[in-house]
Image 1 (tube, rainbow, N blue to C red):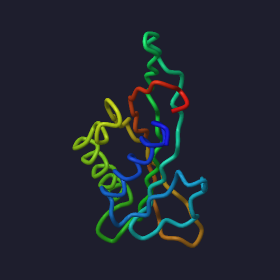
Image 2 (image 1 turned 90 degrees about the horizontal axis):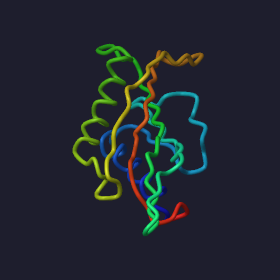
Image 3 (image 1 turned 180 degrees about the vertical axis):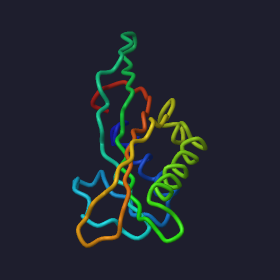
Length: 146
């Protein structure tokens, strides 16, 4: 696999370990998430955009700041608002990122951006709240195709 796909797979695995009860989707060719949010929440990992690399020429090394979009959705419960639910989910992802900022050595640094949140309206479903943010993975590779 390419460095880009290795980093994406590691991000998805990090989120799955941070939120073991949540449904974690993405990176499998199915970009559309189900219309209803599962009871334990849902996270969608998108492939994002590595952008244009900075290049060192001798030897050639390509340095990327890959923005990986993360979508987090959670249900309002009787004990907590939807905002509290997704705040906890994002907090657990943030703790996992802080514990392994290099994704086991795959990247130089992993940094979350500030999240945006909004209500999710699905007819006939419990009230849900959603949030999105990017994880910016800084990594280098010897080829833009590897």
